[in-house]
Amino acid sequence: MSTPEIQWYPGHIAKAEKALVDQLNRVDVVLEVRDARIPVSTRHPKVDTWVGEKPRVLVINRVDMISTEARTAWENWFRQQGEVPYFTDGQQGKGVKAIAKAAQTAGEAVNQRRQARGMKPRPVRAVVIGFPNVGKSALINRLLNRKVVASARKAGVTRQLRWVRLSGDLDLLDAPGVIPSRMDDQAAALKLAICDDIGEASYDTQRTAAAFLDVIKGLQQTGSPDDYRDGLQARYGLTLDDCTGEDFVIQVATQKFQDNVERTAKRILNDFRTGLLGPWVLEWPPV
Image (cartoon, rainbow, N blue to C red; front, side):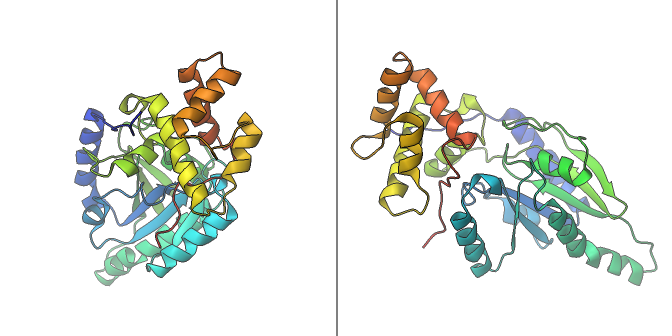
């Protein structure tokens, strides 16, 4: 079984991207949200073009799903690149106040210019952008301390642009998740599928589960600090030491799911996505 080709046909995403770009000239600050498990693969290739010279706040969400070692490694790496990452857990609200403060601070220059021209100050306008299902709406709800935008751990919940008054000093534009019309980097596209950051129609579940296990095996062999081996052993009674990802799925199906490979593949992916296998990342900082 070869590594799957990830395909998507995001008609509503293309429409959302156009609407987002049309709104960006009204925005003072960009909050770019990425998935802590795959912070490189959830960087949209057009984000630099969209942001231009506007201040950007880099938000690494789902920090609750990665190890302390991974967070430290990524924080050090981003700072070496000249960026300040803000790590958040949108579901529990961890780190969200720091985001609001960072956005307001980044947008202060807007009101300084307005004041210099004799104009009254206005709320800073920030947009929240990122791939589907990286937790943008959950972050907004936590910032507001109430549910004002739909939020769920699946792709495609937010379908239209919506301005939300966060406080007297900050307005947020909640934007649908945007993905490129095509992904030339299939390794990155695969990680989006594994982490459920694209819709299920875009990938084959069995092949994606097998590929996920092959990624894990590769990380295990390169000495990742995350304890993948013990996590798999504890959950399924098997390890990847002497088998491929495809073999592993089949063995688990035989032993636990009456040879139902599709059901097994869904369970393995869901176990990872919900953190049952452990606080694992699929990407470590580039060397």
